[in-house]
Length: 404
Image 1 (cartoon, rainbow, N blue to C red):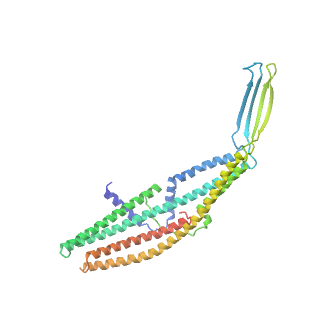
Image 2 (spheres, one colour):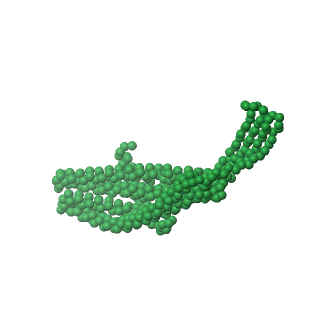
Image 3 (cartoon, helix red, strand yellow):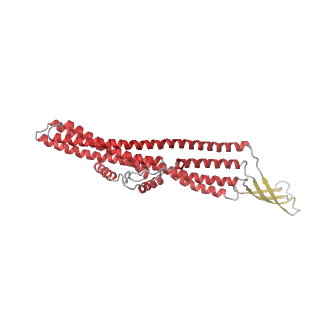
């Protein structure tokens, strides 16, 4: 693919994308792009795999025993010593037992783990939505800059052709043509820079979504926010606290290792002149509860609980700041757009008036070029402010925890 074809492709993409700005409905396209980003995200894959782990934990918590039974076997004989026929054979099965309240605590822990997973996935989806919103609007901004730069280049080429004609007619000096040609080259360089930014923004989007950007940033409607407590990041933080509390409950419910119940049978004789005797035995093994065993476990669970509580408070404070920043940014974007619209109108009118003066020979080319550059800058700033306002809406929805 030649560079010319590549840049033409970028220009076509810029026109297609900018033509979609401020479309009426955005939620479906955003959701589709978010689903693609979710499918490619490594952290999301890890969370999805965690479901199988929780299912296994639930099976273990609902089982009859807290651990696996064990088979015991022993054989004692004097065949290698006196060889009088003494023989003793014992076989048994040992099973661990649930401590009082331990199984219920494990079930509570599994439920808390599942709830924490669901909320963590929702919070991650919101995070990916934020990255997607930023990536889409970066592409849209770059595409709009390409379109404006192409329009400016077209105007510059027309001016250069007009100056060339007037130089040939003797109305203008060669220096004016040099200035016009330099102006065209400056605009060409600006277009090349804009196309490069569009290419880079498209690559960043593709890395996130796994597909080229075919949907422009579409202005989101400002949706009424839920209460702060219902924000996905805070619900995820609270579910982490509940999970840590459940883990602490498990540690407190299992203050000792699991007791073991052993059921065995013994077959024995003292010498070969006697017949075998058969007996059945029952044994209970009850480990002691010691601080050396329990304190590290409970201390670790208490530390995890303290950490999740601190993370919740920090997340709440951070969210309050982010929402205020998003609100202020949106309000500032509204005001900036109004100012930029006025500037764009004034500079465009000024460029038209000065063009007429130049056509009549009443104005130098230098002043006309300055006016056209000012009009181009104002047009570019106005386009950027329109996108900044739309992005401000998206950021406000994002800060308030609203998913596409």
